[in-house]
Image (cartoon, rainbow, N blue to C red; front, side, top):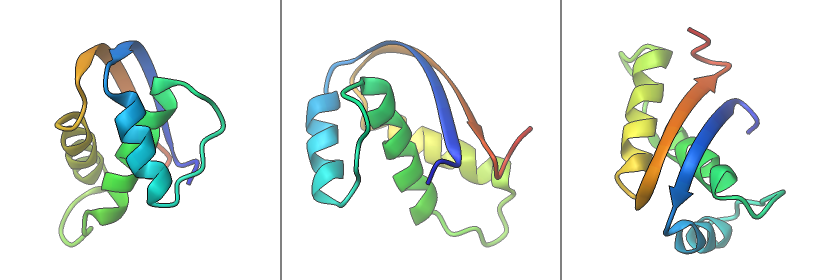
Length: 86
């Protein structure tokens, strides 16, 4: 959606499998980076979380936490969203 941005340092070891699943689900990638895969993964989680009673920041936290449960690797990340700019 272009509404989530990620800064990432490290390696996501299973990014190829995650990318294949996301591609199958209709995601289109502009690069071959593991960082972009992570951004799509967080965005997918964001879209699935119902906003009922959650602030945008809480929703983003849940989306990031859920996405990271699927990730294998060593990394540091920072995530921002236009919906939760703080």
